[in-house]
Length: 245
Image 1 (cartoon, rainbow, N blue to C red):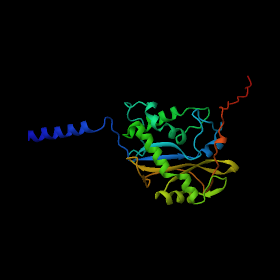
Image 2 (cartoon, helix red, strand yellow):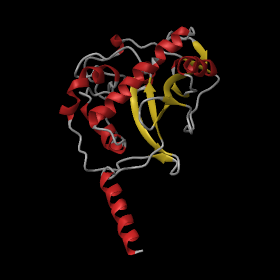
Image 3 (cartoon, rainbow, N blue to C red):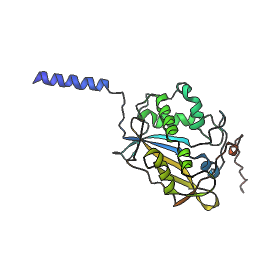
Image 4 (tube, rainbow, N blue to C red):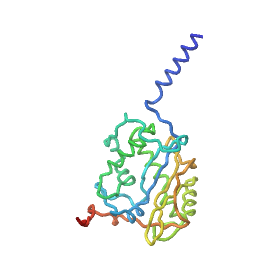
């Protein structure tokens, strides 16, 4: 009996040693893609050219979020032993600049965005830093949401499109149903803002979403154009009017 107990302890010890330090459980990822045209038209300060140059005229990655169904929330900041190192992203820097871009004002070089994403979700993924970002970039490329919409006659041209038709168009290409989030747009209309896609925990394949957050869109939404000439080359200053003493 004592020998069995010793053997069991040895096995458990070996398994614990083989497990990644600070390993975190999660069930899937949300790949959240943002349409920059919607951000530019609804942002208080407009949008700015990033310090590294112009981004692509396409959907950007906004987040690659780890999600735990048992907790019913995103898994965040689970491993403080993996500090962000911008130098590790050098092999994919060009793609990050184009497709995980930060067009907020004032202008930024994107480092703070990627650092925040890594410290929030990347450390929970179990992937190396460059592999976490590369996985999200590859998924964005494979999804080609802008192309999927165009194939079904849905283009960023100020026209109104059925929200269900947008979901159907993405489903036709990927075989999974996306979530769609809207925000305020011109002419008193809501506009297409975000596409939510669910990804397996290996970060490799799209899956049917086990759960989606509460996303809000009306039956028809406006698809606002986006062109790089819409970006401000300098950061606009907020003008503050003097207050009465």
